[in-house]
Length: 83
Image (tube, rainbow, N blue to C red; front, side):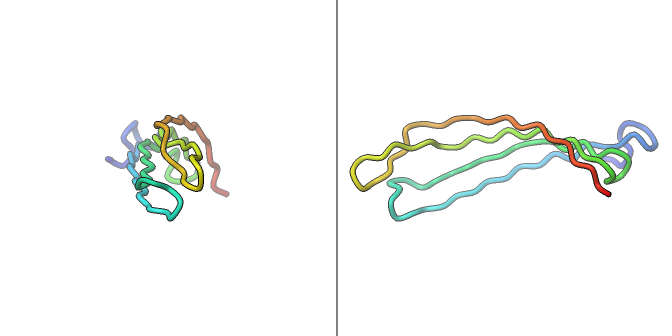
């Protein structure tokens, strides 16, 4: 997004999306993990506040195979300081 979106020296927002798709021998279906979030960049890149939502499958074991049982979401808020 625009630099200094919130005024000179007050930072900007940087949205992002991520997808991870994989297949494994013991898992019966293709694995898909999806993230979407937004970074608030404070004073350039000196500080960053991130809000991230992840949607991922969870599994149950059936014999020697692992089968998906459903999907769950996870919300993460983190702050990072650059020195």
